[in-house]
Length: 108
Length: 236
Picture 1 (tube, rainbow over the protein chains, first blue to last red):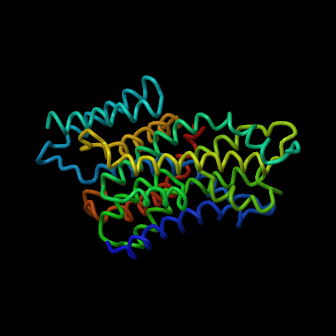
Picture 2: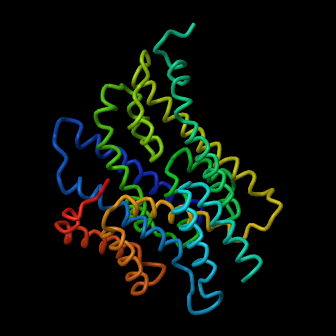
């Protein structure tokens, strides 16, 4: 990417963020009631979107060759186990990342 | 002398409430800065993005967007969807942010997950102006994030160990947030819809272009299955 393209890409992210943050205040500043479908999406979307983001992070993992996605699978399992056990966000992240670094640097 | 109800007392009152966020933002911000640096970007990138975007998940994703081919529409849609949850923070804060004057513009701009959780749940201390208190929380939080990202971006060049695999920090973050969302639901319909749509579209459309089809698929399924999903309920 050229510098101009980078700036444009980042601007797209800034614009989208501003829209999501300002839109509710622009649309519902009076005493209008929030549409039921919007309320529903507010509750239903997050879990689906974060599932998408997890898949997005792992999109380039090749399970047919190389390390067959084994380091990724183990590390995701470590994050999950740590999180279900202690439920400390930073601990789960640090533990999983450390595990992954060890695996890709020393084992695979 | 500072009169009661002024900015200084608002910052003093707000600071203790922001300490947990300070820990989290410094750790995450530093990780993000290092991640950008080892991906080949100057510390100016994480610093400027922390100032202008101020949204952790999206900033992490921006790294891989900047490293792939230029695709502004996909970037915009992806950013919209990642940030969509802010729509609902906004809805929840409509009342609290009323009558806060010009500060309201910054309050809305800086409404992140963490700032939302403080400002939504913390009663404004007595004698402190509501708008100034919320402003102090928001600004302190952003200072932590920008500091973390900048420090990480600078430290990234001086790391004495092999950083291969450090990028997993983003995956780990999203896995954790996903688990949190999963635990909030009694039935896991929406989480499963998200996972199923993403994997299906990844197989059909490939790694470079599965995002937009996945979003369409998720939206269509959520709309189509609204009745059973709402009936199952269990949203916190």
